[in-house]
Length: 395
Image 1 (cartoon, one colour):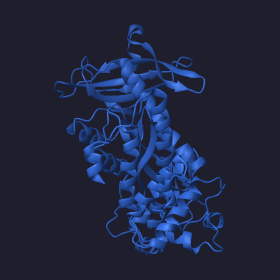
Image 2: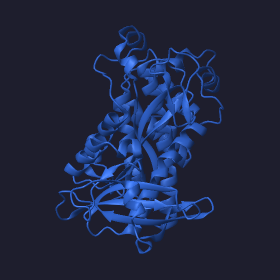
Image 3: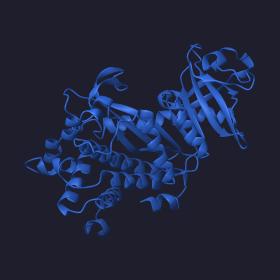
C-alpha cells in the first residue's frame, strides 16, 4: 500500500490495480517478491508484445530479468491461494444469480520437449495434433462480463509415469494422472463449493459426455447444458427403455418440433438457429427434468449440435437456447488472455511456474473484467452488490 493509493493522485483504474496487487500480495511473505509480482502484473497489462522475462524486466526498469523470473521460479508463494483470491475478486464484480460456469481446455504450442506436460497431443488452438501443453480452465460469466477463475495443467499419462521428468519439472508427488474430464469435475466442484451463484454449468462434448460430471451436478441440484456427440446413446420417453443415438432422435422429429431462437449476439447480429428438445427418460423427480436439446443450422440443416440438459421443469426452450450460446464466453476469455495478456507466453518449464503464470494472467483478466463490469453497471444504473457471503468466506 502506498500513500498515492489513498491521497487522490491515482486514477480509478490505478487504485483498482493497486487493490488487486494488495490482494495477491497476501500470498507472498517477502516484500521484494510482492513488488516483483506487481511489476509482473503491470507487464501483463502493458502493451509489451511478448510477455517474456527480459521484456517485462526492461519495462520495469531492471537491467536483468532475474527478479521477475523469480516470480515464476525460485520465489516462494502459493499460486493456489492466489487463485482463490482471484476467484473471489472476479466474483465480487461479476456475481449474478443468472451467471454460468463454463469449462474448456486450451493448448499452448511448444517447440521443445522439456516444459512440463508437453507432448504431441490434440490442441484446439492449432486444430490438430501438435507438440503442446494443454490446460483445463473454468470461466465465470454473467451479464456483467466474464473471467477465468481456475486452471489446471493436463499431465499426459507418459509424463505422470516418468519419475525423472516429474522430478526435473517439479511435479508434486500428490499429482497423479487425471483425464481432462476428471480435472474438470474437480475444478467445477471447487467453484461451486466456493459459493459462486450459478444458474447453469456449460461444457463441450469432451466433458458433456462424462456421465460422472452429470451425476455430480445432479446430486448438487445444479442445472447444466452440456454438449454431447451425435452418437451419444439416450433414452427418450417415447422409446421406453431402449436407447438411440442423439442424431437418430433428431432425425425423427417432425417439422413442428423446431423453433427459431437466437443463441446470443454475434458480430453481425443475433446468431439464429432452429432449436428442438426431446424429454429424456431418467429417474428425475420434480422440480427437475432432463432433455436432449438440438441446435440446427439455418443454412445447412444437416449441421446440428446436441446437448443434454438438466434443469427445472418450467425452463423454456428459448432460455435453453440462450444458455447454450453462452459457451462462447470462455473462448472470449482465451482470446483476450492470449491476445493481450500473454497467457501463452509462459517461459517457465516447471509445474509451479506454469500455474503461477496462468494465475497472474487470470488476475490481470479479472482486473479488466472488473473495470468492464463497473462500466456496464454505470450504463444500466445498477450499483455493485456485495458478493455472496460464501464467496467472501472462501477467501
